[in-house]
Image 1 (cartoon, rainbow, N blue to C red):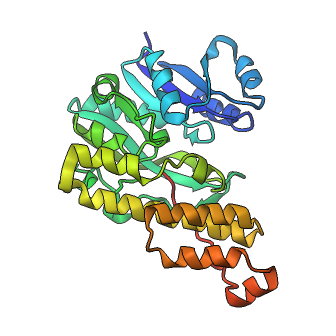
Image 2: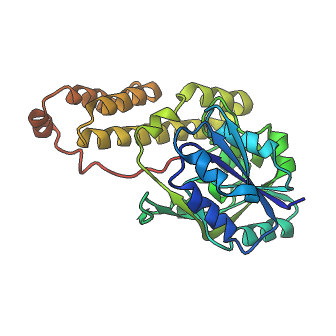
Image 3: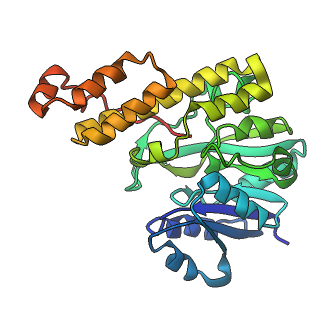
Length: 309
C-alpha cells in the first residue's frame, strides 16, 4: 500500500495534464500512487490519460466540478496521506519529500502546505505570491475564521483520517474555501515558506463564472457552523469574490466582449448590491466603443490579476 495518494481532478485538461503528471513522476519521493478523476472532459483528455497505462488509475464521471472529482478520487485511493494537485499546476521535484517528512516529524499536524510561484498559461511568472507577510505562517482557528487563508490545493498534503472526519469537499459549492477551516478543526497545520508548486493563474472568464455558485451557499454553511465568530471570513470572502469577478469583467470589456463583461458585473451585484461601479460598468457596456472609451477609457489600465481560490 502506498504511503501517499496523489489526487488529480481534470476537466478538459489535455493540454496540461501531461505536464502535471511529469512533475509527479519527477518527485524524489516515490512511495505514492496516482488517482486521476476525469470530470466529464469533452476534449482529448481521456486519450491522453490512456497513454499512461497502469502508471495511473483513472476514474471517469459526468461533469460535477472539482470538489466532486477530488472526493471521488480520494474514495478510490489507498494512501495514508493525500496529496492534491490540479491538472494545470506543477510540483517541484522535492515537494513530496519535504512535505511528507514534515508530517512525519509532527504527528499532531493534520495538513502541510507551502508557498507557490504563480505563473501564466505560458509558464512565465506572472504575479506575486498570494502568501503575504501577514499570512506566511500556519494559521490558528481564529485566524482562519477572520479572513480567507491563502492555501492552494496543489500545495497540500494531509492525513486521510483528518480528511475523512471533515466529510470531504462540499460538492454543492464548486470551490474549496470552506474546507480549510473544517480540516483545521481536526488539528494543526504546517506552513513551509518554500515555493514547492508552480500555480497556474489563467484567463478568468468564463471560468470565474462557471465555478461560482453565488454567496449564499458558502455564507450559509459558514454561518451555520461558526456563527458570528466567522464574521471576518464572510466579509473577506465577499470582498474577494467582488474584486475577482469585477476584474474579469473589466478585462472582458477591454477585449470587446460586452456580453461577458455584463455577466461578470451582474454577478458582482449578487455579492454586493451596493457596488456602484458595477452599475456604471453595465451601462457602459451598452454604449458604442468610441463613447465608452471617452467616458471611461480605463479598462486597459484597470487590469490587475487577483488571486482565485
